[in-house]
Length: 141
Image 1 (tube, rainbow, N blue to C red):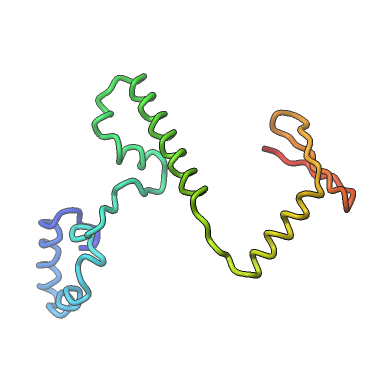
Image 2 (cartoon, rainbow, N blue to C red):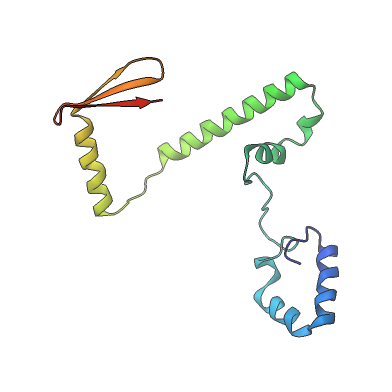
């Protein structure tokens, strides 16, 4: 019942459950079908939240699937670019107070970071020199 995508399929499973025990259906009705059933959900759970990027892209560009390969790839490139810009704006404009303990840790780390010198070794490899402890750390990008 919970996984049924259509109301018709949900109703079919409901009648099957009622044949076994009517009390189960009464209990589930009191909980509220919209709280646990896909078919009665008030939220579009299939919008863009999936476990992988392909599912997210497929959910938002049904009309673009008919395009030839190159325009389709360009559409997907622009779509992901728009997502990145939107996510970046959301992050920049948001602020969350983490509490005194974690705010203090972040400020301490910020101060310590000013005591370090970062130099690129290659385009993806960096050397970090901690001036206070006089130790070198290698970071990969």
